[in-house]
Image (cartoon, rainbow, N blue to C red; front, side, top):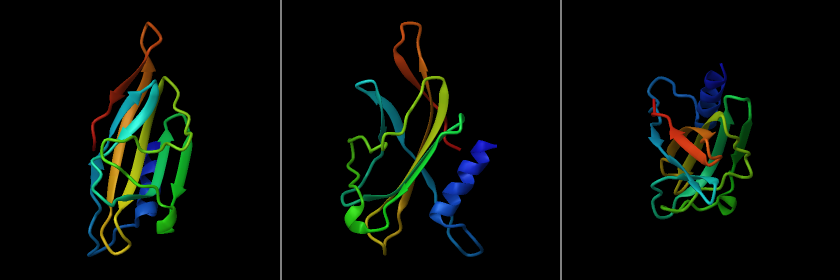
Length: 134
């Protein structure tokens, strides 16, 4: 049920497709661990900025941030972790993270998604299991 709500929120965030509207493709993002913290990586292009970030878990955690003013939009840089805005990732939960990037208000933006499960191994070390894109 939460997956349906999360997917519906993404459509509201990105605009609901209707007749003759192009459907926005979801591109894969990579979740990894850097210094024992979640790091989301995307193949950002020069000049791309974050328009919105949405994160959620199967445990009911949710977070949505939008940056309508271009001056407040954080830059997205290829090879650098995207900000997670203090979202608390807990072992044993599955997560979805969506980042909407745009270069300008007149250019078509891109939507990136990472789906993963965070867990601890027998030694207590954090690990990530990537989930396949739909």
